[in-house]
Length: 530
View 1 (cartoon, rainbow, N blue to C red):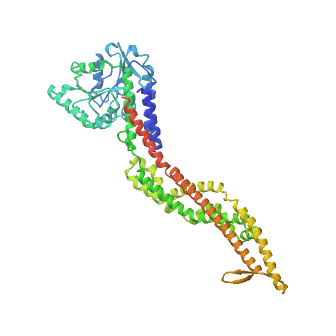
View 2 (view 1 turned 180 degrees about the horizontal axis):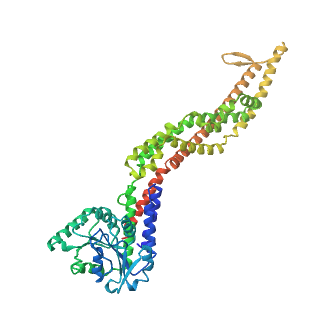
View 3 (view 1 turned 60 degrees about the vertical axis):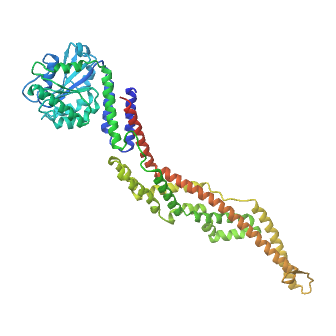
């Protein structure tokens, strides 16, 4: 994988970490540093001599060079600023890089077998002068390789191991430990100390790093091994690329560890079964407040009101006016108003409690840096407010598309009611005439159990019965249409509320999982950069 692709995956990791609420300013600075380093292509790489006070870095550099390049002396610290020792053939092409590193003192050499490396003698990182350590801290993230210089007195120094090796060694692919001032030990003891240093490096978890023993003050004894390591055939571009790739890999691993992403995998924060149970509980609680059963009654009332206007015959205007004037139409036949007034029927606090419990019970398993971003989800007022907005949007959409169902049967029943009304009037007039004209002839009809009944009375009774049957048929049909419509509306509201809850209240959890998955993907990708 190319180094550009590696840095693209680093950008992906930064984006995912930002979404998780992680602090990424240091990683962004590292990313910018890596991009800047790539902007200085060169056929030479930069190696730093890093170590504590008095370990002999300057003496070691002079021994490698065969001449005095860096000032040495008994006064500590001797080196107050970094000094660069570069091949004269690379001086011009390294000028921009050295300026970026802030190197003011440059010494040149003929090159030869060391023509592909520029060596920096750094100030002491444990110097009593704070600016010296700050200078080292600024340069180490920018160099391509490091020779860690120690001596028999300071090879176990915590500043070296805890402050620098553990931080920078995993980010370097070309490095070596130089046990200098070996003249303080016998050859046998020097080997023991070197082995002890290797063991400590393994305990530090920085991997296997070569350790060479030098006696720079005694005829440059052992320096040949270090020079041989420096002269070993390595391509400068490969050193730079591996350094950048290793740095990118480490910072992505740090971000992944902060997010709880292990081995390139990120399990969902909440198991799907627990999530589904919480979602179902929130939906049930929300629908109880909305009152779908009450909505059905309202829908039936609205449908019957509409049916009366078309199927009640000549009396439809009178009955409709009575319903409007008494307010029954508004109270019992107003589904849209019933939906919009849902908040008057109760609080959503009990409905959001399952979701709050879900997040609260999950927080202990979330890495500490991420908890702050999820804690806000557990605030009951915030959850209730967001759920209320979700319900409002859903019900407003339903109300806007509200249409009362209708049927052609109502018009047929209405026409029949006109006939019934006419027959009723005729029957009443006929029956009344019997009292005005006492001797008016009238026939009778034999009715079971009742015997003979005057025809006007029988006709009046039959008319009333037919009218009742028609009215009941209109009521039953309108009620059936209303309940069917209400069930469809209730199901749509149920599905919409459930979908909106999952798509709104659970979005932070989904985004959290998606960001962790993105971080895991970036982690797997940068592992292939090396």
